[in-house]
Image (tube, rainbow, N blue to C red; front, top):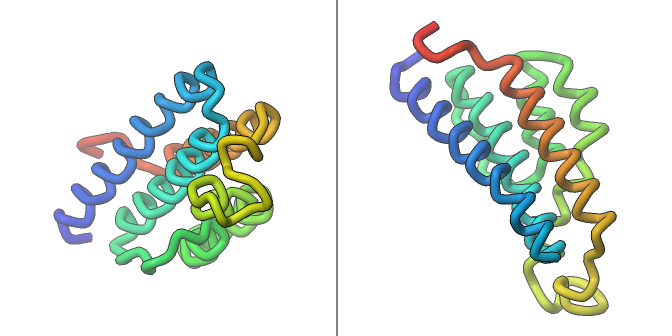
Length: 137
């Protein structure tokens, strides 16, 4: 693997971890729409980190399902993850745009939606981190 891919992978994973650390703050502030969007971003960035780690340029997509499918070429376990976390994908649009749903995202999303999004983001992040070699390894 080219060294720049390893560095890029580490950057994406670090940003995913940073984004994840903000989820609880947003949840406590009852910004459930933002929690859902940022949870999608955690999963997307973690999956892209994994692909960079494999020496693969991630496809230009925000689809969690698609990223898992590409990652499954390197580790078939990503297909199982895909079926569990693909529901994060719509949050990329639905949780941000006022015309994506029947009401604005700030009113539409509830605590249960946000809790589930956090759980799925954490599942994805941990899944990727388990496959990420220790720094310097």
